Length: 477
Image 1 (cartoon, rainbow, N blue to C red):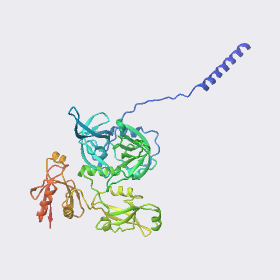
Image 2: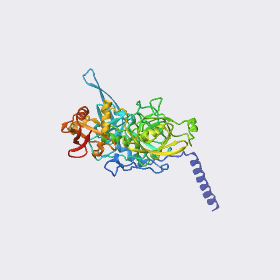
Image 3: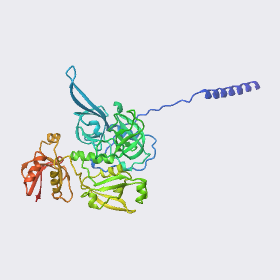
């Protein structure tokens, strides 16, 4: 019996020793679990997403995963191919094509798509490929080189689309996702954080440029241009536009146009075919530490006014050289890009609240924005002044608008508050086809007819969005 007991104890000890030796020699194993999750599309309650206030963000902690945001964004991001004909033929008589590729974001279920202007600029054919492989020929509604944005449209309904988020509520350090088609790889999702806001990197070659980018470290490469930057809720908070690189590839810095600016620009392009840009009427400069000390500012922040344009909204309201603008409508403007972005959200005729420092204390006043002194829609400064005195700005209809609407005329793009035109209750977007019964086939004809009139003037025409014909009358003295 004693012998059997010793044998049992010996066996147990041997087994325990073997288990210990095995565990010591065995390498840790990685277990990969794959799970399938049904796709979810982002939608808006409003029928017009461009008129819907952006979703205000609450503070968001670091997420456990990015599945929800990726599922919302991926179906709404498209591939865009812009093709140009270079009018050269090869040995076989075939036309050679050149072009560019990028990404775009569906922003409404009826087929409106936002992308970068540099993705589609100069394209004679624009092809859109959806996430589900369907292909469409897109129509260019309008573009704005000042912000590098463009609006496209495809003939389709019931599409997945993204909701605009409030880019002003973003926090530095907040998680974001970049979604696009880099190197023609479909639906690529990368994650990063907001590195900074209000960045200007001097990539837009225009005097009226607005550069106030969201900087992130989410990986963005060629082909991502025009794609979506979303927060962890899946809200669209930017359009990816540029990277800083020495190699031509991603090196850690990417930049996106803020969604609040995108929403304003795209709505103007959709409604008027061009951006209506309100002007404050000041020349501005950054605040240095020396200037802050001299002006007794509480911080080295704000925008210094070096000159006020006579007759501008700023001059009318009482802003002066030496004032320091620190907020627009309650939003802090510590830098030039931040102020340009805030003013860029509004149209001529809109009134904004400006908070500024003067003589060591904060003051506040309301400024009504006006238009640029020179406007590309007019070939003659006197003609521009004449139309302004009546109370509106107009442009020729595009070839595409004439084809679709089957009319000739001019389009009203802005109406000034307190003017004769505003008193008629005319709305921006009205298409003038006749002046006192005379057909209007363009801006030049309209101005010539207007110059001949005195007394009552009747403007007749249509709206794109409303059936029937409309007429508005005013007195021309």
